[in-house]
Image (cartoon, rainbow, N blue to C red; front, side):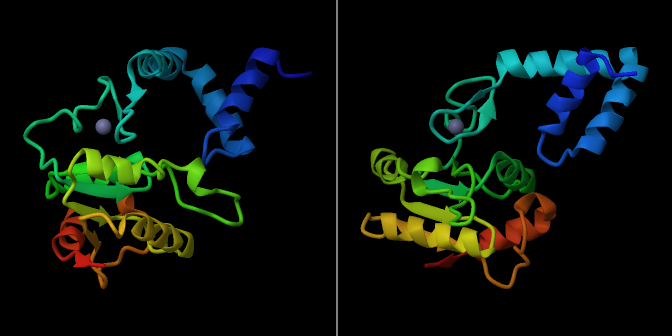
Amino acid sequence: MKKSSEIENLIKALSKIQGFGNRSAIRATINLISNKNEKLVPLIDALQAVHSKINKCPICGNFDTTSPCSICTDNKREKTTLCIIPDVSSLWAIERSNYYNGLYHITGGVLSAINGIEPSDLNLLSLPKRIQEENIKEVILALPSNVDAKITSHYIINMIKNLPVKISELAHGVPIGGELDYLDEGTISEALKQRKSV
Ligand SMILES: [Zn+2]
């Protein structure tokens, strides 16, 4: 017996999610169909709400119900400090630490020769203009410490080094080996507090 096309389509859609292989997609599909009221219905509602209400902020790249996002429009934030991060999960991690009160710029990833990711594929080229227009005084680079991220940091430094802006990097010696969302709040606060000028 063949699976119905409805089931096949759900498996296919789920298997395209990052971190989901075909086997996980099959397991999740069976789990959802077996628990329609408890799992499938709330999932449909959540997906519909996200689809209709959440947008990408045109300034920083954050996801929010308002556009620009609530961070970019918050007058209590330190508007002359800009933290450069690779993704929204890094933003959530830094916000969780309750230490940083500046603005963000989400690159959407890092440069990669192997994967063919060039500066124009990322949210990078608008950065010098943003720094000038918003009168940014300090840029904090908070990209991971792998080779591609380091190349990306150097690219950013080269792009903005002639602007009247202080450039700093998260502290060395703090275990920023991977992604910020794996770190606890205290470690993130320390890495920001002990940031070094580059
Ligand atoms: Zn924003």
